[in-house]
Length: 612
Image (cartoon, rainbow, N blue to C red; front, side, top):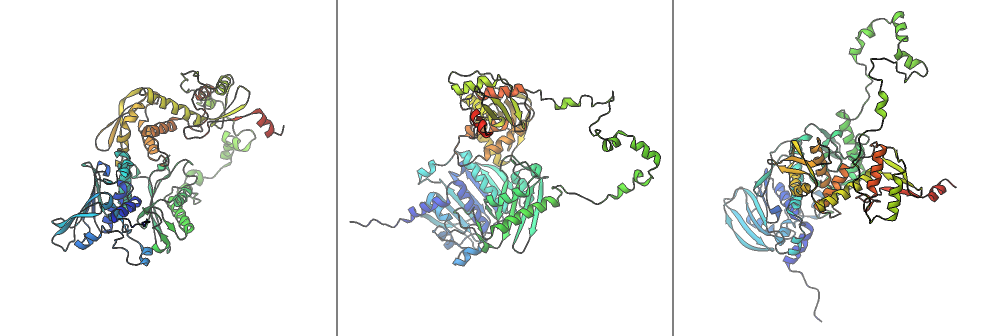
């Protein structure tokens, strides 16, 4: 019997290793940018073609490499940053795994040009499938230029798993944003398909945040800075009014390395407790500095997940630092017991309170309201008063939901038909401006969640409209202009065709601007920009665990956004229309996100609950 266990050839071993490090074009962008930073560059240019599938090039003015180092850099486990096992616990550089360039060369065609400042000529190396094809001297500027072409050309199965160009470009922009934010003292540029998306001049951290995340944050940032013997923290958090409904602009860096940490995110969220709504998320860009020996950064191939030696100390420190920053800048409510000196100089304080003044004050309605019984809510009648009809403020809102146009379809189940037919004959009632209480055919109790129910109604209506024919559009007399960040611009260009079928007419208008020419006919005009902003946020932060199509994401986002919210008062007529429309749906019992739209309580259940 021949032996079965064989050593893998180097090129295959490298391709397997590349599967851990280079998962998509954005993975290569991250590794190349980090290497450029470690080389001491002050200018880094990133050039992308075809969302990184045909070209990823990083050009820097760093220290460059000698001929021997350039050749060695493509070998597996080759690194200039680790010489002993102890060095692993003192890591302060970015790229240190020693597999990045070897992994890239295993799945792409790589061209490297590099030159050290003290050398007269540089070196050019061409590598394909882990094999050096060419090596020769070349005249190049100081620094390094590495071009990675035709990603996964020799692993077609991996290439087939890549997403659309717009989706891959979004991941590239995310990685570029994280590295550029870590090092505001470095000039970064990003050019995609011969169009420059970013030109980030070297400057302060606040300038870099505004450049990357948008100018609307310029006046909404609160500085955070705390130093102790164990760790330091600095950066910026957003004011409460800058919080968004989706988990968006949130960045944590440990020793200048971007990390994902739900644990530390919870620390920031707890600092904002009772300052923002429970379903809102604050903006933050926070940098933590601490001794590398108390951090393990090598627990994940992409080094985005780390372990702290004492997580509780870090949690408490982050929470306290954010709370202190918000309080220091008068964001949190405070009580001031010091008397204002100017008040003491008022004539009403300085002059004596005579008996005549006391009698006049005691006879006033304001004095009676505080001293006599049953006077607190008494309002004197006055023909000129504008408070005659104050009680009209408490009448139900007159706005009505659109009437349900479709009747029950023949395929509706008997249970749905019974509930539907009976629900409109009874007058429903509203509980906590959130739930609708009604009864079914068998006098069973139905408790309907108004927002979940409306989301189901809108979802099925939009899904049907997107399949049959485009939604009717109302053109705007005064089109609104929308300024977006480069990252959001890439998303908008991706979803414009699907938005058009859903009734939104949006056209490009310059580099990062769009004009909203029309919106769906049943959407109130006037807040188009807000609607699109929220839509983009929800679309960006859909869970990566579920693979919805672009249109499905848009439909779910629009249904969630346009649904009536909890806390909204509804008239009897609106509640009836909502119930009718819900039980005309094909799947009325759950919302698009899988939550129940209503709960049904049988008579027997209610009797048991009351011990009958």
